[in-house]
Image (cartoon, rainbow, N blue to C red; front, side, top):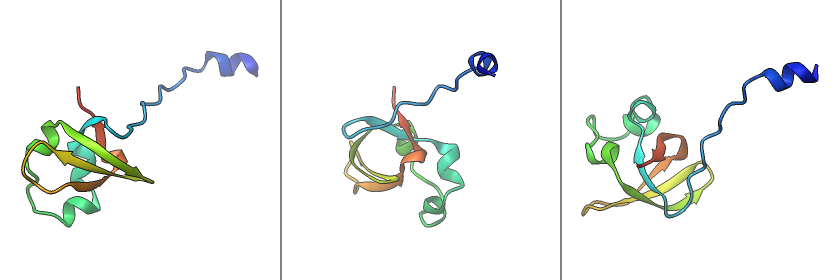
Length: 84
């Protein structure tokens, strides 16, 4: 039994985003979300291009500040990805 566990490929868990990380929004995750349906029909391109700075992480949500004269936004952490 131990042999089959060792042979099974381990899934790589993505690194958790932390305060100060540069992020962008994952378009596929955002498009089907409650947040997208509560917002403008067309999201601005800059949120998908990034980078935005992750200011605060509280539970499943993170506050993101963009390098533009727009308000900070709260988004689910599973909708954010590291900007490279």
